[in-house]
Amino acid sequence: MIALRLRVVTPRAARSLVVIVGSAAVFAGALFACASDDEDPVPPVVDAAPDAPLAFDAQTPDADADVPLGDVCGDATGLEPEAPWPMRGGCPKRAGVATGVGPQNATVKWSVPTPGGESSPVVGADRLVWFGTSEGDVVVVTPGGVVVAALRTGGPVRSSPARSASGLTVVGGSDGNLYAVDRFGGAPADAGADADVDGGGAEAGVQPARAVWKRMLAPMSSSPAIAADGTIYVASTDGKLSAVAADGSAVRWSATTNDTLGSSPALARDGTVYVGSSDRKVYAFTPDGATKWAFETGGAVLGSPVVGGDEAVYVGSSDGKLLALTPDGKLRWSYATGGPITGAPAVRGGTVYVGSDDKKLHAVSTVDGAARWAYETLGAVATPIVASNGTIYVGSADGRVYALTPSGLLFFAVNAKGRVRSAPALGDDGTLYVTTDTSLVAIGP
Image 1 (cartoon, rainbow, N blue to C red):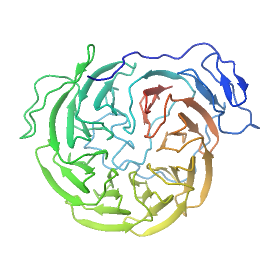
Image 2 (cartoon, helix red, strand yellow; image 1 turned 90 degrees about the vertical axis):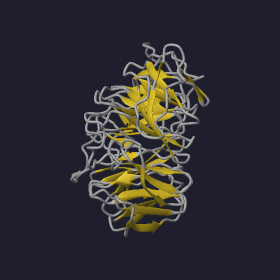
Image 3 (cartoon, one colour; image 1 turned 90 degrees about the horizontal axis):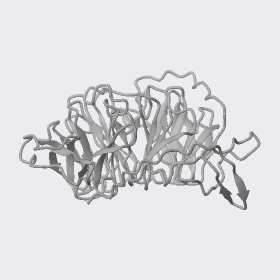
Image 4 (cartoon, rainbow, N blue to C red; image 1 turned 60 degrees about the horizontal axis):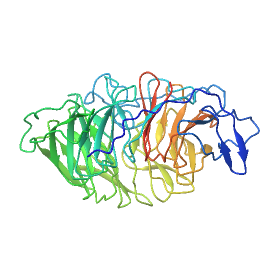
């Protein structure tokens, strides 16, 4: 049985009154008091109502640095056309850069109480939101916060989905299967030897989704990347990177990475596949599986490498270092944070943003690796994304989602009802979607 509770939580309409007693605060509504310029930029620890925003500082975001964006997406023709956020990181390069503006205030539209955990949401062309849960489901939610479909897999879904050009949602499972899912139930289509899959796992009121095909690989935490020709690249915890045919009918090739943690691949414009590994290396492969190079880092690589508009590769590791590598595998610069980096950076123009277990979001120059600023939260910081106006959105293990200006000032912060360990997704209407260990939360627009 799916443990989906279909109660949609809406924000309270009352204005807030905050009474601080020691380290606690009592909320009498949804909106938190504005912070003054003299206050600490970190919102206080509060016992907030489930949907209460925490704080906001009413100032508009600054203009982004005057650096050309370059190609921040790569070749996205293998992804669903018109999907505003078809895969984690937005596009095959995973640079985390949106073409639209995100929420401009700390309004929680709704939340669906089901644990997303490590799976980041994606948004399809029909504005439906897909994500995996720690309870083993692939869930489909409407823009209004209603769960309409779900597929039960054989274990927790830590992988983030990707929407393919064929209109299917591709996602890896800890049960070892790579799934291609259609939200509509029914008899599965014929897609080869592994296609005898049916939908299931839905409670009353939730339609069973359909697994059109599945391909047994090995347990996956990695999120798929889809190339222009439809090839699906995904890493598995048995230390392999696999290239799977678009219809799931065959594994075209697999390469050894020795990874056991689940770094996700990123694709450069020329088709080069970059992926990290727990063996303290970043690998580059050609589209046909040949190794181009391997760069040794100082720690395990848990998050995905990303490819910036300048074609450089940016990646963090467990030794707390953010590295910038040239396309031919040479070190351009290294930047030290104060703790392990477990997520992926985001790169826009002349700045790369990366979260660290030192509880800070760091902004670093793409040119020379110089620190621009660091914003401190109350927990380990996850993977950020950047809107078209330069606003950075990022979640933290302190249970908050932060919106920061390009100069590192707090725009607003929202109570996300649980620890955030994944990257947000941005819809084309400006809604920000965030998964936590307790729910899916929609913020704004």
